[in-house]
Length: 286
Image (cartoon, rainbow, N blue to C red):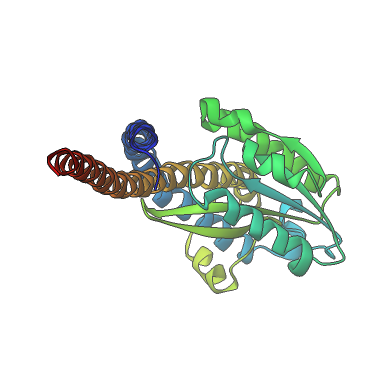
């Protein structure tokens, strides 16, 4: 059994760790509220814009479509891996890496698969075995639509000039503080919804349907990427808050076990001392 001093040091160390994890949990909870409000407010607009664009694109003739809706034979794929800049958030980043590896080894096996990393953790792991065309981890330092729009413009350019035949987003979708859903979402080419093609026929378009689609597509793509990063940002804080909550509970349980062990060891030491004193007194009396 460990001596009393060693157990006291372990109890003190665990107490310090518990204070840190508890503080990190509260910080993440405060940040989560703001991030959750942002993504909750943005989703209806982003979803409706995407729905409108898909409906209009589906109703256009082949000649009136956009280059962003062009379906090609998939040989080169660019995956936008959205992770976090910091760890201590459970399986948040691990799930993204697993999904990326699945796409390389299974979904697009035999194809050229490159990555654009958003988040230091994903970049550090993926670059060991894959090609990283760009790293935009600093976007989390000031997460605004304008900064994300620059990344979206780069992706649109890569698709337009033919460097890649398909671009996909991989990120954690925020459901609640304890649940994040790993999403693999096609960014380019634009997915058209054939069932919505008839909806566009009831409207009069000015200047024209084609011009409206051409103006909507860049805005819709930028909004789609911004929503994905916002989702990931909220998911990160939710995952970290949950992870730190579990870490605090585990530290508390371990501290209680050590206190029990300490009390048993101290009681055994006191009992031994009493036995030695009694034994010595009986020896003198005898």
